[in-house]
Image (cartoon, rainbow, N blue to C red; front, side):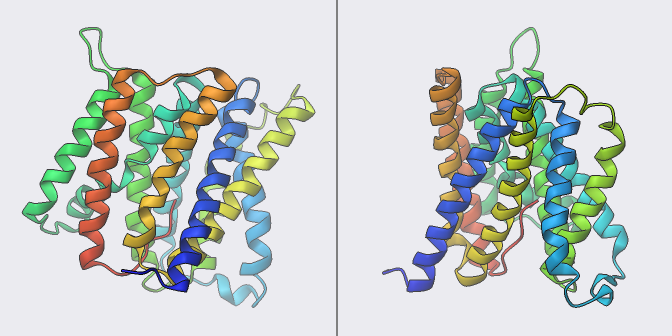
Amino acid sequence: MVPTNNTQKAIYLSLLMVTIASTAAVATKYASARASTEAIVTMQYLICLLLCARITLRPGLANLRSKRMGLHLFRGAAGVLGFYLFYAALEHIPMVDAMLLRQSAPLAVPLVVWAWNREHIAPRTWLPLAIGFAGVVVILRPSPEGLSWWHAGGFVSALCLAISMVATHKLATSEPASRILFYYFVLSLACVAPFSLQDFEGLRWQEWAAMTYVGVAIYFTLRLYTLAYAIAPAHTIAPVNYLAVVLGAFWGWLLWEQVPDSWSLVGSALVVIGALLTIRLANTGHKRPVLPA
C-alpha cells in the first residue's frame, strides 16, 4: 500500500520525535554524572509544565476543571516513577539496554489491561508476548548470583509506562490532551520536587544546560507524538519508535564506547519482534492512539 501524504508526514514527525528523545537520553546520562536523578526529573517536569501551561491556560482556568483527579494522580505517579527508574538505569547500564527495556512497554500493555479491566487476552496475543518477554529475560541476564538489578529497574520503568499508557487512554475518553498533560506535569513535579531541594547545589552550568535541554526535548517529544498519532494510524508509525534502540546503541558507542554484547543483541531482537507483533495485533482492533507517558 502506498503511504498517504498524512502517513508520510506522520512518519517524518515520528523520526524527528525519536531522534530528539534519544538526544534527551544522552543529555540525561551526561548530567547524571554529577546531578541526582531527582534533580534531573524535577527540572524536566518544571520546564514541561511551564511550556504546557501557556497552551492549557489560554482558554481560561475553566479548562482545568476535571472530575477524574484520582486517575490523573495515579497516571502521574506511574509516569514519574517510570522516568525516575529509566534515568537511574541510564546512569548504570549501557544506553542501548536502558532504551530497549523502556521500549518493551507495548508488551506489558495487554497484561495491564487484563489486570485493570479483567479483559480477555486473545490467544493469538500470547505468542508475541512470550517472544518479547523471553528477550527481556535475556537482557536481564539471570545468573546464579541473581538478576542485574539496574536492568530490572529499566524493565519496571517499562511496566510503569504501560500503566501510564492505559491510564491515559481512559482519561482521553473525557479529557482533552492539553489538560491530561498539564495535570501530569503538575502532579509529577509535586511527587519528585520535595526530594530534590538539596540536590542543585554545586552543579556546573554544563549540568544546568543538560537538564534544561532534557525538559525542552521531552516536551517537544510529547507534542510531536500527539501530532503524529493524530494524523495517521498507530500501526503504521509505531515501529518507528524502535529507531530509538539503534540510536541508543549509536550514542552509547560514540560517546561512552559501549559496545552491545551478544546477550543484548539477542534480547533486543526478541523484544523488538515481540513488541512489533503486539503493536500490530493491538492496532487491528483499536484505532484510537494512546499518548505516551
